[in-house]
Length: 332
Ligand code: X2X
Image (tube, rainbow, N blue to C red; front, top):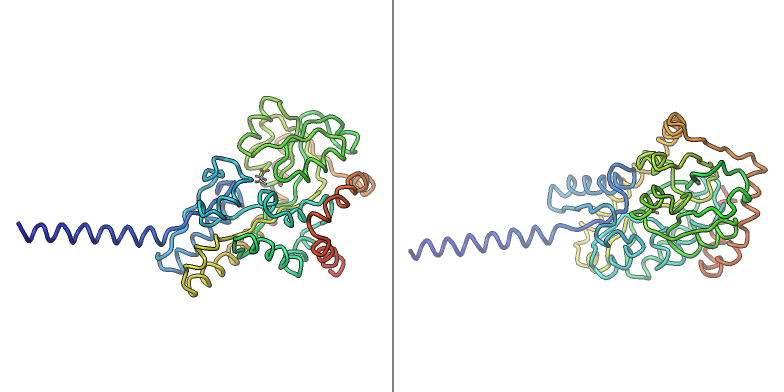
């Protein structure tokens, strides 16, 4: 009897300590998109590398669809800062309400291609952006990519700012997007990705902007988005990041492991995302979407129409950071 009780106590203690250490070694990772998309695959790759390199000691559990913030993706950064979420692979768009410096990447037509984006993230401007995140209680580890964002709608081919007049366009993130689409004569409406598809389906909004990978995987063409304009107006990088308290509690070796795994997963996903673009565009065309490619002159009209956004937002982003980004782009 006595012996049995003793075993029971031991068994309970063993279970408790096992679950305690399991709990202590498992961390939540928030993403907006699932692993059907490059974004979710980036987070899963991070988790897989960490699992493998820690020999199963550290588990990163990925929670897609911004479910840890009930779909409200612009609350992800705050939830991670408060400790409700341990880690995230998040978009600069969704974090920009809390980290105004990240609006840099949303400045319309600041970057023309991936080389411009890399020049920013891999240089002084990228460091300043990471410092801005760190200052707000989050430890950034590595860059990934959601991609250059293209414009789709259900009404007509868009070739000029005038074509956008009065169209209701779904946007997300900071008020910068309201300014950009208002400057173009459109009627922007803020809503989460969770609400976007239903709104496109019912026609509550006419259009949206997202990378080709999102348009393709989410089958945005099936909700009436028949027209797609390749205008490359901005690209949102992804950032792998960790809550500061979680980070401080980790032994140095684990920090290094997490950081290197994030860097490797980010590089892997950026390559995956970029190399998939041409095929995605072919597939989108094959589904009957009318794809508009702008001439240099047509493109320039959009650039001109949105110059005021740069003027209004440079002070909010920080002139030093905007300068560093511009310098990086011209120095390429
Ligand atoms: O909501 C979007 O448009 C998405 C999925 O691209 C982001 O989270 C920024």
